[in-house]
Picture 1 (cartoon, protein in one colour):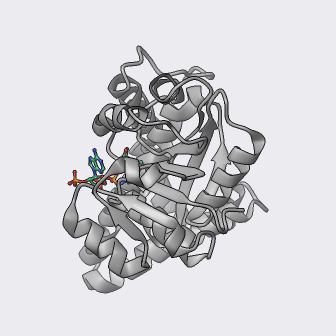
Picture 2: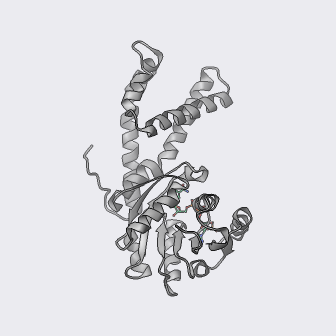
Picture 3: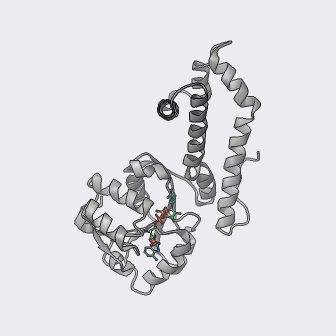
Length: 280
Ligand SMILES: NC(=O)c1ccc[n+]([C@@H]2O[C@H](COP(=O)([O-])OP(=O)(O)OC[C@H]3O[C@@H](n4cnc5c(N)ncnc54)[C@H](OP(=O)(O)O)[C@@H]3O)[C@@H](O)[C@H]2O)c1
């Protein structure tokens, strides 16, 4: 879909770099057709060396003639980048923004009426092709734009589509989700060490247990509660452990964590409150 077309990336940091790796390694875009603009000279050199892409310090240079532009600078840099781009004729490109909390309307207002925007919330495991991303189309994006965006994020994990009003919820769940998982793994490793395992062995067993369980859930053959039943026999070890987790209100704590992160995302975006279609 993108072969032979020019792509510009503004901001080649962690997430921009992960996307570049994903789309280049899958042959979705030729390296010579992809230009990355980044302020950081060292980062530009790294990207040019790793992927053979064109690099530039000039954001406008990266978008000239582009049919797709990925905006992957920090949210606080977006207003400056957009006004820089708007100073020149804005190409008839699809603009994909991954900046947390920046609404499609904000980009549309600054780049000019009718500009095609899709907003995406990816997460950190995109770095290794295991990301979870949600996309929300802007007012002027087409079905083909959404499909292209879906393909790009599928190159670095999975992608689902949601209404833009749910992007704070996505941020609270999957945007912040890896942070929750790291904390859980850290605690399981501590527990394993306390029970006599080495840290190395405890880390492998803990992380793989979560990964394996997650993969079983993603197969979609059985709901998580049924899978849990499969490992919980009456009077058994898992039941003894689960009882402690329920007494410690793990379930309620995780729900409260996602709610707090969702509210914080809304707050950071200057929105009064997040949308909760279902009351807790
Ligand atoms: N990392 C995540 O897990 C994650 C998850 C979801 C969404 N996101 C979103 O992804 C975006 C990028 O995050 P990141 O973690 O990749 O950040 P990052 O590593 O800091 O990358 C941003 C890059 O853009 C460069 N930059 C800053 N201002 C610029 C400008 N005006 N023009 C061109 N380049 C500029 C930065 O250079 P300097 O370092 O020199 O400033 C840096 O190399 C953010 O909007 C964030 O909300 C990230």
